[in-house]
Image 1: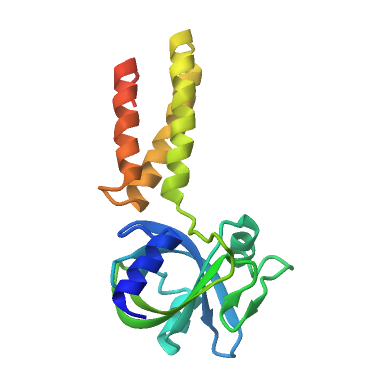
Image 2: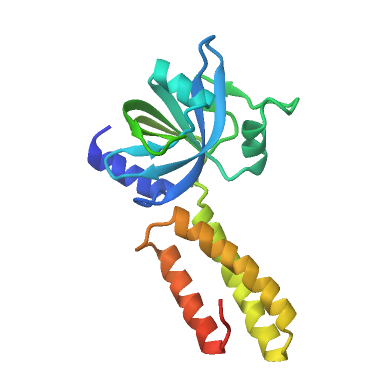
Length: 211
């Protein structure tokens, strides 16, 4: 896949450069079976980056087999089955690195590796092929989801603050702080997500509410 085609396709699928979005990655186990795992992936423009724990099956598999797939879905059941595959009786259905029920699949090749932290690696993936399964596929972004949650909380803060119900205001502010923390970790500093955060903080200050 040419770089220009890659960048255009990733943008259409909802990958914003330097933002972390949530996907289900499938790697190949030593016995030939498949290992699905929810994971954050970062679009670096000319490549994708994932940061698996070095103790994970995903990392061990990528050390032995460079091929993997990045599966896009907003379906929570698929994330649940993939995250707790050893604890749940019902398993995900996978065929040739394609996750059944996903909106799109990116077949990628590992081309590099570095150390991200004492417990995580930084793995570089180069997309080789994109297969669309759904007419309107998009990645799941925790940043975007948290922004919407924070906006909803803010609308209620303004009402309860005007009513003088500071207990409910503080309860909502606690939720907003959590949202802001997630956004700061997964969204780029110049992203629309962070712009919304700045606007919400300005509104809170205008209302006389301390976040």
